[in-house]
Length: 132
Image 1 (cartoon, rainbow, N blue to C red):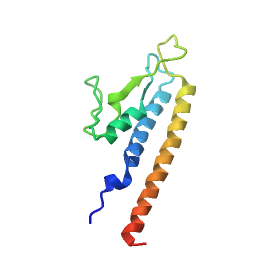
Image 2: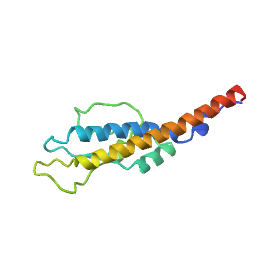
Image 3: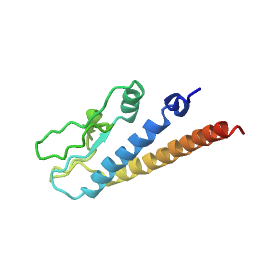
């Protein structure tokens, strides 16, 4: 009998990949905290994870011809939204460094949680394969 890895691993593998992608977005926001006109972006993680769970293909939408193409990799770009600033700056930058750092830290903890759960599932599968 073959092992159905999708059923065995659940949503944890998708959550881990999406958390990694979200970390990149948040790090990009932090890196551009002093860039005039930069618009902070984020995503609704639950919505994106539900799309991944439903098996809908998610791809990054290119909004400008000079943007880098990412191919057909799973992504949350369809649900990327601009962050509404609490205190808009005069140069048009919407990055609030405190919010971005807090979101990044929260995402890192969630990433570690998903990693730990996925690791536990894989250990369980290895024990089952070995007959332990």
